[in-house]
Image: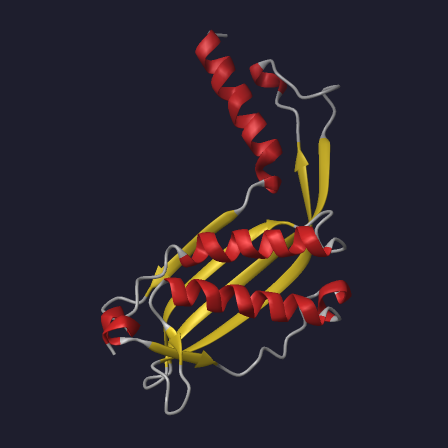
Length: 184
């Protein structure tokens, strides 16, 4: 086997094994949405769906910290919370935690393996946060951001949970176009 093929295969397997520990963040912008016309926001109706983990469902600080972090990032992007009157945007979020299981198998055809060459199993909690920005006049989602990461050792540790929320929301909101609050 050529050395470059072996290195590529080894590198790919190393990335796969560490994949469950890497935060993934992305977003979608509705085609034709003009974010320069938006300046104010308010919170949409709360999500009635459970997070999926009682440790977060029963943690009032989680929702408060999450909303505060989103508000901070919206302000940094040029949006302000509407005091009176109708807002331009409604903000809605959903958080969920689900148990995931990944199995990494050995591929002896290429002459490499991991550890003792037995299949490796990774059992972990995966957290997903979705933030929707809705045009209040049309009731259409104009931007959706999401963040996923492993939650092992995070849910039971308030400090680590806050850091994880802040990191995910900050990275996600970097993808949100700037608003126009400064001009109004």
